[in-house]
Image (cartoon, rainbow, N blue to C red):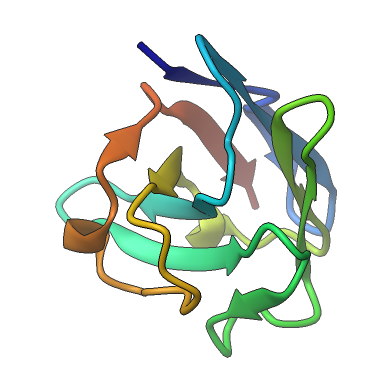
Length: 125
């Protein structure tokens, strides 16, 4: 059974950078669309960005230009590079997989059927 494990979270000052990683164990990502979500206290889980197996990425407008998603299909990892971090980026960040074999990156958490445990990112002002 495949599992997703995130790493790389921590505390960073505003304007700083962090790189999160998500590794799959058990089997390969295959054609799964991989995505990053985040959830701040008292808020709903929100889509950050996603990436297809062929490397095509999709971001929400607020993260475009600051965040970069990449994946290494051979190593079975997906990463989220975050730059120019703001206090409002503080949240638990989750890696997720949509294993249905679709081609379109979805922004709804309900479309993803496999989740990691999350990693905390705290941006101090």
